[in-house]
Image (cartoon, rainbow, N blue to C red; front, side, top):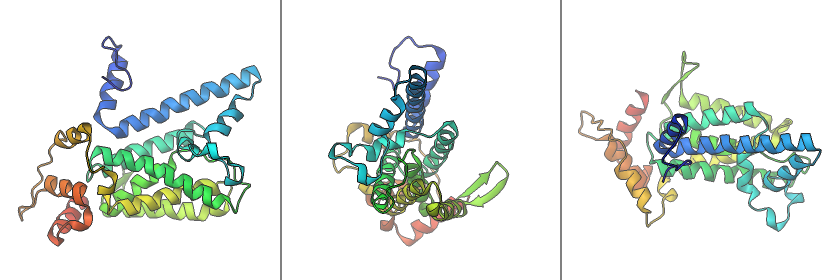
Length: 276
């Protein structure tokens, strides 16, 4: 069965989307965000044309409100808010960062671990917003997947802080510099109009930083068949250092027992690889 389109007779563009989504859960998350935004836009346009409060109903049931306005049935908004966006630019930024941060982290982790951290980052961002909103009930409802995106970015940064990033394809910066800049922007924005959003950024970043050294927590003890297949069919890297250390073996060890279980030589080898 394909995802998200399973018909055997598909138009070429549907076949291309189906192939792309099969490549990685990162791609699937990007597509899910796009589809949710299309649905959100259709519902909002329907409300404008009909005069019915469709947009307000959507925000009431899917966006994350300040905790004072919660009722017990709204717990799902700690996750659903991540699939709404304030506009096309908001979606574009989150989608691009999800794509690049997710693939950077896949250098070290299995695809399923990256997918689960993204979802966990959204929830962590929502929890951070909800707790802080107790003191700031005037905050507008929270929307956007930035918490999940920052979780991926900070996890990748902790795994390989010196990994080179080419900004606009020209300026070469280490990954830690990019992450530090985004963290400083989020911290400085805690006093601005998007204070709630910036609090969610920090919540997602925090869980990503924690999980970077504990990736095994993202895997269930009894793996599903699909997760096992994802590991066994991962494209082999076969990067071997002069000291005989194998990158693929090191990455498998990280996914099984965590980064801290690596030997000093293995950590040094991984750090050298991240700088290339």
